[in-house]
Image 1 (cartoon, rainbow, N blue to C red):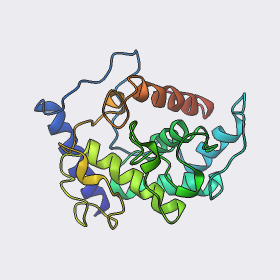
Image 2: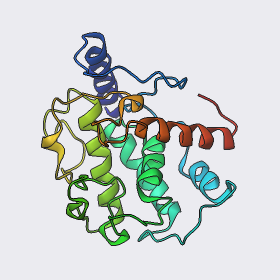
Image 3: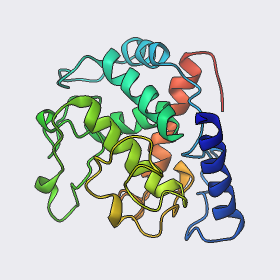
Image 4: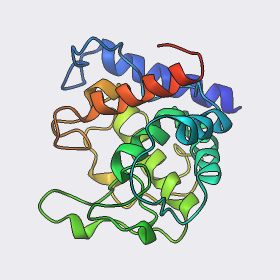
Length: 213
């Protein structure tokens, strides 16, 4: 049944792109177009191996409320439930949190790994979640809102887990950015290089584990 749901979501994404309803095309940065909806290529242990084994290690102290092993597993599990590539979402959280050092406006205690609600004009309004798994689930649901035109409401269905994303309804139209390359410049973040930054790090994680785009 989960496979059928995933296929339906993927078809919706393809139709969104084919019909020209997405407002921006994938960026021309030399990186391939990487869909948000899809199957993770890296497992949780592979993500952790890259996170711990890459050099140089980032400065600062790891400050997330749970170990990175738990976070990586949450991203893979929650991503699989919604048909979102959880391994790339994990990399997105690294960009957002500074390798889970949380040196920005969103403290670790909020369990907000994607800056949800932390708009440029008022970053202190970032959403807060009761635990790390809920924060990951909200991020995955928010990603699906951006990437999947069939995710018309934050409810079950079309989602497969209860709605925890407080800003799901604010993503309009649904499916506006089905590719990670389209993120930034107003899609999720204001930085025009946001999507490229995520994909460069994801490429690094793939290469660390002997894979390529």
